[in-house]
Image (cartoon, rainbow, N blue to C red; front, top):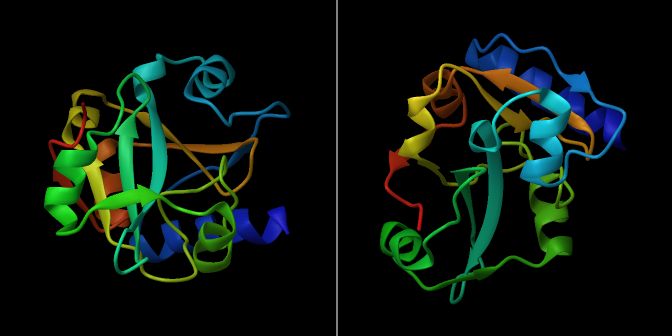
Amino acid sequence: MMKRSTDRVKAAADRAGLEIEIRRMGESTRTAKEAAEQCGCEVAQIVKSLVFQGADSAALFLFLVSGDKSLDLAKAAALTGEKLERADPRHVREETGFAIGGVAPIGHKIAVPCFADQSLLRFDVVWAAAGAHDAVFSARPDDLFRAANATAADIAA
């Protein structure tokens, strides 16, 4: 199952013209701190892929947030037009094809509206999950936003 998830990420990157190399770290990269240690970068350079669902619609929304920040739910809700709640892990897996802890910014089974923390643009390189608990890839933030069809916004608390 994990192989197919990382394959979907690689295929999505290729379709978007984003050159990536998926690295399997051998140890968990589920948290921003773990990922930063594995990648040898600042925690802030880790892209957290946070999935929330609309309280009324149950539609999924993806928020890409810097590892040193948290999502401001009020700002996020203003962008989506509805109150947000944590997405059910089973719902996330069924709709995106990724398990929580390995949700990638690209390669979802369905199109998920995506918003990206503009503070990530302060880095030359950021690291994101690649579809498995120990898989990551690096990219320039603007290239990643483009590949994820993400709207850059002020969404951090």
